[in-house]
Length: 420
Image (cartoon, rainbow, N blue to C red; front, top):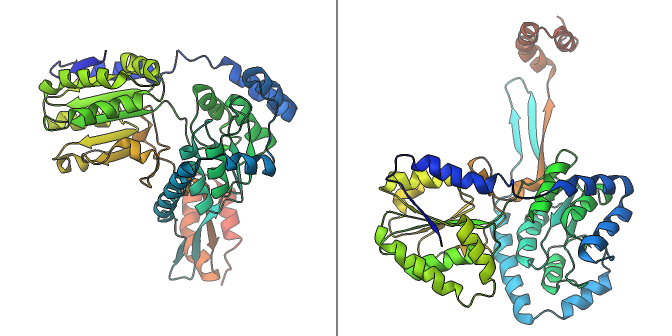
């Protein structure tokens, strides 16, 4: 079911890159309607949002009332409520440590520069229908950052709100909830709610919509389907490997699950374990498609090759389910999140370890990070030069502006310098 790549082949790197590119290119995804939907909403606002919600989701109720949310939350299983409370506490505590600090600088001429972190005024969060964990991961950093207006877009399922998502939204201090999905949800957030930034994962349609509105609003990134890379050796529990791979594959047919090992003898055991774990899985067909289309087992020759492969793949999630993980840690530079040791299944980090699960995918951890508190701040420099200070540093600025042939710059600086 899962393809195998042997790194003894001298062209293994090219083969790996080509394999990854098939999925990363997203060429098989038809997003041609997205631009049309967004342009219609830009022009016709809520009327257009309702039109597309009716067409694609059979939903004509875009907003919720406080009473509807309250009644929905009453139906929530107390066990789920406690689980959300527990996750909220851990995520809040860890992300609170990420609060940025303002910077003050004063030089010997009494020139002052302040660098301040200013919370965004408004944020839109896209939350797939039944995922309260995603709401917590996205809304808590915004709450910590003191964003004034937090708007959540969460589709109804058969006309109903999700009680767990509604409870999580209430706990996170969400300002309002719009109940629509897809490109029309993104259009609503941008052109009706007029938020400053949109965060959160979603489908390929949602990702394309975010890409198209970038510039009008900020975005956290272009989220692709979920990914995991597991590093294992001959001593790793086979069922731990298998369940991690299958666990990620059930997210969707475009999810990617990769095993990297030096030990050929465990490959057949892992393959059998995967089949065993698929047998009674409710989302078996989805997982099978993912594993068949995008699953990969990579057999490496040595530790250096393992590190090289990890950094080339740049996975969303990385599990180092090996006893000697310390020799890899400092050499791994591309990954959204790293789960270390046998007692750290990636699935826990999806919910309540406290770390973030909205992470870079499709190789983007080579240049970006998971969602964090800093994503909800702007940073502004405040510069206040003294009479003496502008004279001292201004003469060097004039030399540079003259060199760059920007004479009006030089004149502007000279106009502030008082001649003796």
